[in-house]
Length: 96
Image (cartoon, rainbow, N blue to C red; front, side):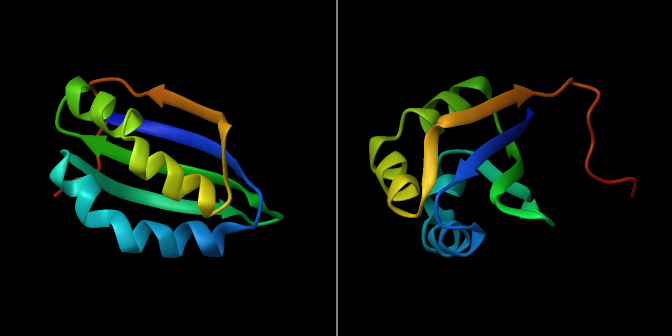
């Protein structure tokens, strides 16, 4: 399942990006994979992320992981601004 996440940041995209690289293994172990992450060209404090999860339970595990929540917040993520949209089962990431 593919999800789109939009979130506000307090300190720009750089600290969040560094936090992600430090914790990507944990995400992968929970069944999640990053497809894309980036901030808006004219607003480094608005971030868009596309992720793929192996199952709805994997998404729930990620969303409820208290240690990762704390790390995201410490990196400047404004957690209460997060909007998660589950994309349709027809979504795809490659044509080859």
